[in-house]
Image 1 (tube, chains in turn blue, purple):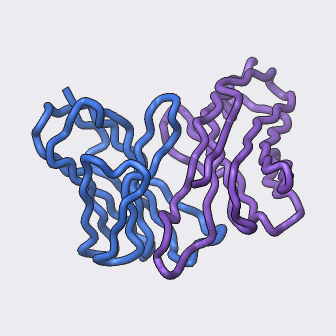
Image 2 (spheres, one colour):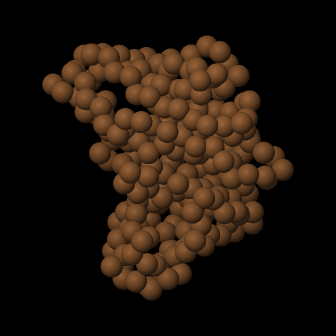
Length: 114
Length: 120
C-alpha cells in the first residue's frame, strides 16, 4: 500500500529538549516536504526536498532542520524546541514531475512543547 | 508570493442539500494547479478534487465539483447531496508549475480552511 508514515504520532516534550520526527514513504517519490498546521492559519510549508541531499527552506523554516540522506526518509529535527512550535506536523511526498500528481500526506504528528 | 483566501471560516448545510465553499487566490502566473483537500476529525489530509489552470472545463468527482473562474481567480467547491461524512475542514490549495531548476518552494500554499457542518 502506498503510504507516508510518521513517528511518533503524538509527542509531549519540554523546552530545549532535542527531538526528531521521522517520515518515510514507500513510493520512490523524489519530492518530500514538511508542513505545520496551526488553528486559523491552515498549513504552512517548513522545508522541502527535491531529491537526496537536496533540501531548501519553505515559508516557516526557523527553528527546524531536515536531512535527506535516503530517498525514502525525510526527518524533521527540532534542535531546541520552544512552545511556539506546538503544532500539528505533516510530512508529504509526490513525484518531482509535479503537475496534478497527488501529494500524499502522512497521518500527522501532534507536538506539544511545554 | 501566492496567497489563497477562504472567506468562510465556517459553513453549515442540511443533509442532502448543496453547499458551495469559496476560494480565491492571488497569482501572477498563467499556469498553475488548484486543489481542494478535506480534513476530517482524524486529521488525515484527503485530496477531494484538482484542477489545472489552463483547462477550461471544471473538474468533477462524483458529488464534488468546482467552479473555476480564471479571470476572477476563483476556485469554489460545490458539494451536492451533502452527507454526514462530508463534515470536515476543507482547504483550498495552490501550487506553481514544477520548476526543474529548483527555483521556488514548489510547495502547496493553503488557505486557512472552512469548517463544514452537516445538519442531520
